Amino acid sequence: MPTMAQAEATLKSVYGYEQFRQGQRESVQALVEGKDVLAIMPTGAGKSLCYQIPAIISSGITLVISPLISLMKDQVNALLQLDVKAAYINSTLTNKQQLLALENARNGAYKIIYIAPERLNTEGFLSFAQNAEISNVIVDEAHCVSQWGQDFRPAYLNIAPFIAKLKKRPVVGAFTATATLAVQKDITRLLELHEPVKILTGFDRPNLFFEVLRPSNRDSALLEFVQKHAGQSGIVYCVTRRAVEETSEMLKSNGIECARYHAGLSDDERTQAQEDFIEDRIPVIVATNAFGMGIDKSNVSFVVHYQMPKDLESYYQEAGRAGRDGEPADCCLLYMAQDIPLANYLIEHSLDNATLDIATARNVRAQAEERLRQIVYYCTGRGCLRNRILSYFGEATTQTYCGNCSACLSKKGEQDVTREAGQIVSLVMALNGKYGRTMIAGVLSGKQNDRIVSAGLNQYSAFGALASLGEGNIYAIIDELLASEVLSQTEGEDPCLVAGHYAKDVLSGDWPVRIPLDRGGRQVPIPKHREEESEALFRILSKLRLAIAREQRVPPFVIFSNATLKDMAKRKPRNRSEMLKVNGVGENKMRRYGDTFLTTISFYLKRMEMCGKADNKQKKK
Ligand code: ADP
Ligand code: ZN
Image 1 (tube, rainbow, N blue to C red):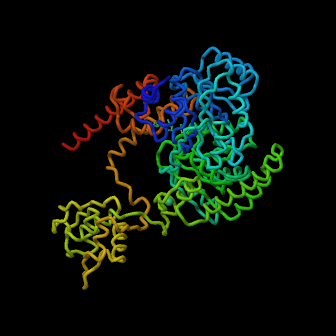
Image 2 (cartoon, helix red, strand yellow):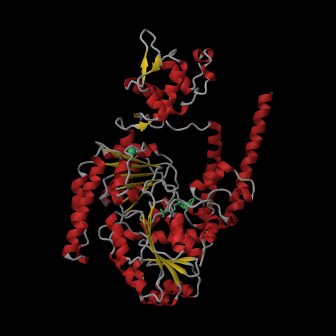
Image 3 (cartoon, helix red, strand yellow):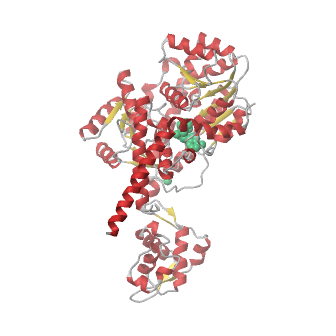
């Protein structure tokens, strides 16, 4: 039996990652120990690794059942990059290719086989599976088995009968990004999981900024948003094909380069659009929900919903395609009241009634209407958007302010500044009523003016302590403290600040202080030249990555993710062992690309050195 030590070693040597993320260790351990798993992890949490590592280190073959074909191709490509033997079997292969893949599989050529649910019970595949050593069956997008969920796929009901036909029951793992409690129960029942180890990592995606806009004109709101994100990669979702057509035309006529994608286009055009987007040739794609279920592109910086989607499950899944690399990303929903009748119309007309009996169809419809009510509430309510999403998915959360959504940052939104307020109060008390608002705010924001320097206030440890907040926010906190009698002012023409009634409570942390902060006020400034330098190297490395990707005909992030390139640009490795320390560089990637990237970095460093010397010489003259 494989061990956790092997799993850890694989994480490092094959994937180049230092640590498991939340939920990954538990999933890997359960599967390695032969226990079934039900894992609900948000998009971007790193589900694939949870089952790929057990697959790599176990003796048998792992089948990954997945509903969408594009996902398989990307996953298999990514695995081949890591030197893991993998293949997929789906309708994009010709009959001959399928036979060949099965033949290879029979000869033990693959550790991991991705397969569409519709193919499981075909004669050829079944006879292969019944004679092979299948150690794990992984069901991806497992919520598709439930009619309570948003993407019910009847073919998923074939999975349990398929497993029952195997000569030895494999370990079964079910993975999904979104499942309410009812759906979780259905997954366990319908996939016949045996007392699964349940892994629920937080649904929260802290790097995503959520925003709902209620524009009077969608087009201008969208245009403004996209222009603000120039140079970044993003998806614009529309509900109807027609809206995709019109919106992509609108963007193009305003000089935005974009592709369109919906089910009414030819296969060729869809494939082209998808590849152009994934491989970073076109920054923006305008699409219906037909786009994306299998899209595994890590550097999507924004997702805009041009219209309200049909439910929060779809919304969170689609919006969740932003920021998979962990970088900050924006998710914006443009809501208008006329979205509701359109959504109702679609519920009525899009049900696949032919395949469902009357009672089931009625049930499916009632569920859809309830989900619609919930997303309308999301769009029109006043509370924290993140909180609404998390509680919808049954994640108990007491936090009502996340500080990273439009509701929290709107005028009514507030952030906890208790710690900062404490620093202000301490300074006021230390200076013992000698100075007013201007001086106190000046000292904390680190202003080097005559009054502050001559009074020696730049020697205090509080000097510049709140510089990252910005002076405006410091004033705002002082005013809040005055209003709530934490501080008060002396009488007279030049009032000075003194401690008020509740000063001690703020210092002890018992008196929470919240105010609306200006967005961006909290960002810690990075020393300018350092940021520019690693940014410049990052751009150079991205270009190199793009060139390699084009040559190999794979998406750039399959070579290295943005997070990996950023880490590389920051660390500037000079040799192989330093390169292996970069997050996301394992031994295989090192072998394939390490030297190329090292050479580029060393050229860059040499050039910088030369520039540095030139600079110094000039200064000396
Ligand atoms: P999901 O399928 O859950 O949406 P993926 O499996 O596609 O997520 O992983 C998202 C990204 O996170 C990928 O770029 C992946 O390489 C990266 N990743 C996964 N696990 C780790 C880890 N332990 N450390 C660093 N990066 C990771
Ligand atoms: Zn919030």
